[in-house]
Length: 136
Image 1: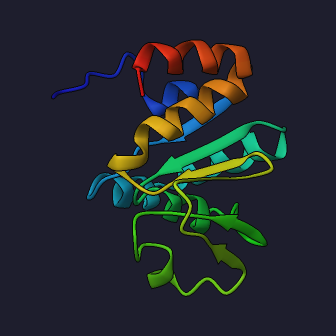
Image 2: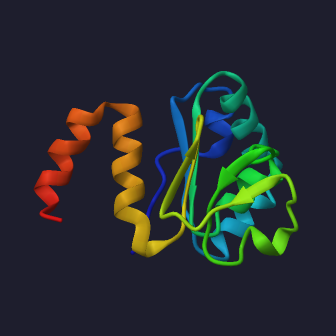
Image 3: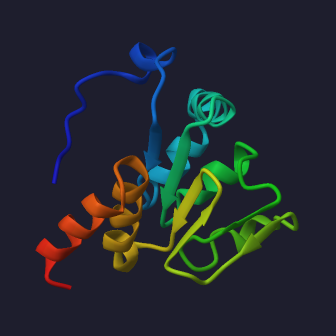
């Protein structure tokens, strides 16, 4: 699948968002982690009360931005553990929410992750509506 963006990061650097969700996978998560602009946007969003979310390998980006310090989080097995983050409580849950930071483990947890994000951005009723349609 090829995704074509409708804007560039440079064009949205100063915009406000309710949530930023980082996709997982490698090498994409590494590319995000190497971009100081991503860290800047994440920190600003967090400081302004927005949600930050990441799945699979992408929680490493939240960690490098300092957003996982003192928090519970999860990731693809071994990703956060390999970073030696003594101030992050690594969990094995499918989705972990610690205040305004949401993390998830990987492709097998993507639906749970998506439903959690719907609940945060809308409400439990909308989550239930979407989940019912999934016939889980």
